[in-house]
Image 1 (cartoon, rainbow, N blue to C red):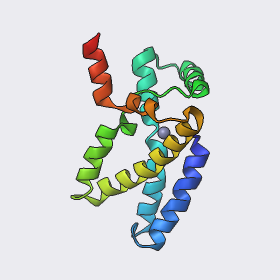
Image 2 (image 1 turned 120 degrees about the vertical axis):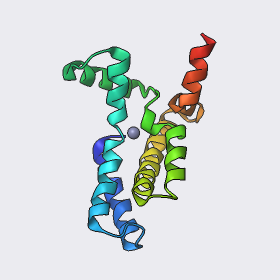
Image 3 (image 1 turned 90 degrees about the vertical axis):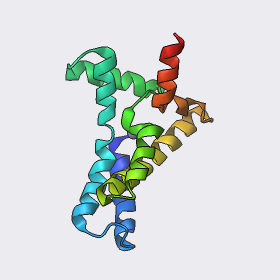
Amino acid sequence: MNHLMHFLTHTLFGLLFYHFNIIPSFTLLFLFIAFGILIDVDHLIFFVLHHRTFSLKKIIKISRMYRKKMQPNLYVFHSPEVNIVLGVLSFFNFLFFLVFLSNVVHLGLDILEHYAYYKHFRWIKQWSILFEFLQKIKH
Ligand SMILES: [Zn+2]
């Protein structure tokens, strides 16, 4: 999903969470919205690691190529494993809860977009660290 849609959706959900006091301050509301955008930094990490480049021009080109194909990859902050850990840590610290809540909204949008493209959920395994690990030891 594009960043504008994430920004708008996080603003809307953030205001709802603020209204119902799930997010208790404007500072935390701002962080909730920021986390909803910043999660996608894992795409950069993936591109740098897999294409071994720091060239912004190349990264933008690669990013557009993946986007056009709606290619699911292991973007670490999108993985179920990281989000399960965040979910558990949410019980102990509000900031983790805020990141987790923001990720849930972000991933919800990303999953909807991928589902609309693929019409199934089989692609979702490619977001998994465990799946990637099992693929690596098989080869
Ligand atoms: Zn995303």
